[in-house]
Length: 135
Image 1 (tube, rainbow, N blue to C red):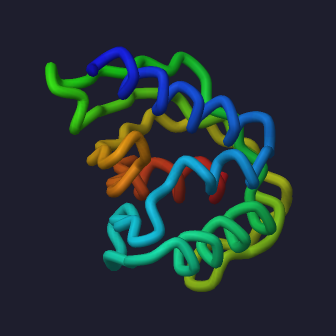
Image 2: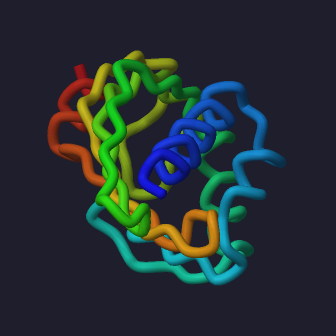
């Protein structure tokens, strides 16, 4: 069971890196819970789609050095990775976007239900990101 969870998360990040939003979103439950880094908790695939639309408009990101860990029964997973990004369009409440590049260590935690991602909790150091894009 843990291998299928690991494969699910690897496929999730492969679809993200490929910009394949159809596959990316198919890997989520309809009632997916998304804990935004230093932000609110959103519930439902529609909210996640809106979040990803904003992210894809404002940022261009690739994730590298991805390591995925799972529990024995395959119901939970964690990933650590590095975000290589470009800040393309100013996001509300954040510094002005001018095409700044950034490199940011990050992590995520997942709940898995019926072979799909049921919860995503992302973490990264927002102060480090702000420092990088403000230089």
